[in-house]
Image (tube, rainbow, N blue to C red):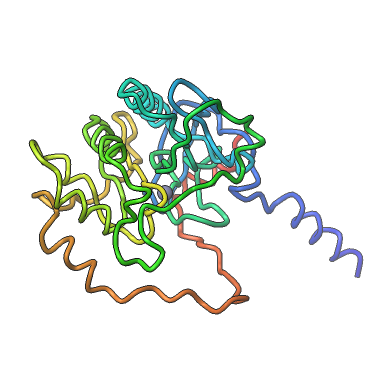
Length: 272
Ligand SMILES: [Zn+2]
């Protein structure tokens, strides 16, 4: 009996490395491999946990790793927003040290080119990283999903979204339908940036930036395009006809999202 049990235990202990268990990036030049929702990342860079105009939150999750282009994007956006007189940004998940599927929270964020930026802003001194695990993170949408919460939403959010939308590496951003609608109804001047705001479920407390595959990343799979216009017509209206998602009853086991990854990701996972 022990003859069988010991190798089995050894395999469970040594062979079952998972994306969330690996605490360091894979060596080598930065390469995004696969698609935003099914891939991995070699040569990830850590976002410094704070810098001019931003601070990372929930750092115990160890999901502050991304492509250098993503780290640069966040730092540049934060500096621009700070220069516009705004409070520092809260930066949430980018990706795991080697990308790949996370045990909870996201289907994407797998190739180092996605990042969550929260709408909440708090002026004043920063807390220490350990105190940034559970900050207040208010929604811009009313609790009854009946529209924008004007006690939280301000013009600063519009400036933030526009600044991000107009940065050159940005493919698209995901925001709640109510946020897109508000901006569709109020934006003046050049509205070309509205195209980059793509409605999606949730995304009322944070928005999600997705960058293009960087040059020199031949295994990075770009995403198909979206609206040619500002996306304020049928593309938005259809979101108001969707049935709301009903959450499963409490206690329903959540099956982890396990997409099929490109074969090259196995080497990224195992590289030392
Ligand atoms: Zn996200």
